[in-house]
Length: 530
Image (cartoon, rainbow, N blue to C red; front, side, top):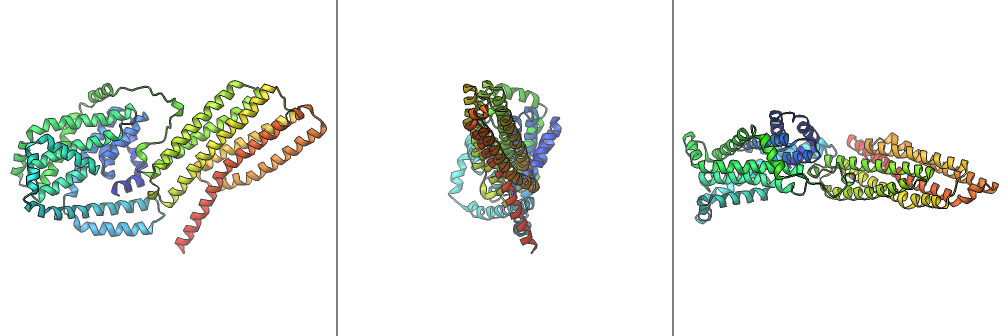
């Protein structure tokens, strides 16, 4: 809850911090520290970097520096959470619950409230773990089970790595290990071994999450895994030296566990920050870039897998991808008039290929949206979810109308060598321009959610209907006058106008949803004021 709350409230700002502070390794290091301090998850930071790398928004060297900063930052958070902050727990939970009810439709404030509740629950869970683990220290059976791990360092590393994988957080794993140490359940030697395993497990989590991403993304998590494995192998033989050093300090065992966790990651930073350039080159050799079979234009550009935990960013990406589909459909519609005017079969083939791209991108958008957690959406985000899904579906329908109906009509005209009358073709062109203008307005409405612009498009639908009726009346007048071209292309003319009206209906639907939502939120605000 803490991570997701801050991610949903500030994810866009945090991504901007990473994107704009990677000009050198030091700035990138501190950017990683700052972002992770807020997100409470080095994995989340690693996934943001991997996502940026996959889109060529950040280089491998800078991304690895960010991850090193993220690893150090989680240790500082662990240092704070080991203090007795139980007195803060009820304050955080009560404040969070009160804010959550007060700002039920408050967007960012509601997410901050969730984060406060999450932090309160973390403090509560740590106190419960300490109390529950205390009697285990007197157990005669449990030490017999854990004792073999002291003499089997590889097995201890694997157990801690598995624990970290199950928790999906190295921070949580280290805090639990520290709690076990303070209760006397494990000795210092085993505790330090488990901390090394937790650090190793913390690198495996993002590596597994990027396994299906492209080479640029996998290089980042591969580099992180190399750094962790190298440092674990270097530190492992010197664990006894750390134990002797800590014994002279005389701190509580839980504090010593956390100090070791911090020292390990500071050592990693000191070792690899100067070596980050050769490490980057090694990662590029280990994970070479492979050409993908999918055409570049058929791949989604804005559907960020790592953003699924933050609905605000995920929906923004889906909206941008939908807008990209809208532009492809707009180009198809424009090209259809060019093909009709110039009788160009080459353009017809391009339109058919473009519709295949629209179908594939629409499928990707749908599948992406199904993975967004609808239960985590606030009312406004739920409305946006429906708008995106509806608009992308309508665009796919428009593409089908252009490809399956308009193109068939155009091809028929070319094959039969029909000619429109001068007046008839002028009406079709004017009607086409009106629909094209509405397409552009619909895209602006979709992104801005402007009710005034939406009202303008809805009112324009009546004008389109009147224009269609006038066109039909003029067409039948020309038929009565016996204009030869009109007689030859009568059904062609009426079918094209019919398809334009169908396209306009799908376009206008986005305006209705914006107007409905604007009215709904207006009523909600009145209710809250009352």
